[in-house]
Amino acid sequence: MSVLQQSPAAAAGERAWTPVCRYADLSPDRGAAALVGRRQIALFRTFDGRLYAIGNRDPYSGAYVMARGIVGSRGQEPTVASPMHKQVFSLASGVSLDDPATAVPTYPVRVVDGTVEVGLDRAA
Image (cartoon, rainbow, N blue to C red; front, top):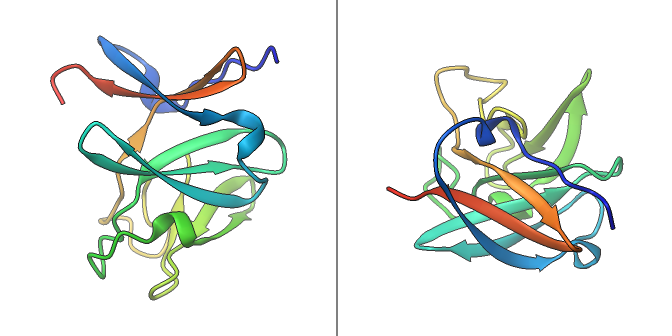
């Protein structure tokens, strides 16, 4: 597979890339949870093949459930709705579309030789 994708958070800085799963193992429009370092990450593969990685912790409830959210979109913005109280977050920026003062962290994600990797800052 020749897909090489990085989310907007992948701009600058030294990254430690962690292999998480095979790209083919991710179902379109479904989330998957992964432990990367000491962080719980929610991975999403959208129907158009793009990958997103956000924090798995719902900032409203404190539960680690974002990977179980409902994937969708608002206009051109890919989103996930928390399964707890249905607040909607941008998969690209992590910002809540219902309350822009609240956000989940986003992480760079890429595919190398068919394997999905998530990047964390080396200082993280």
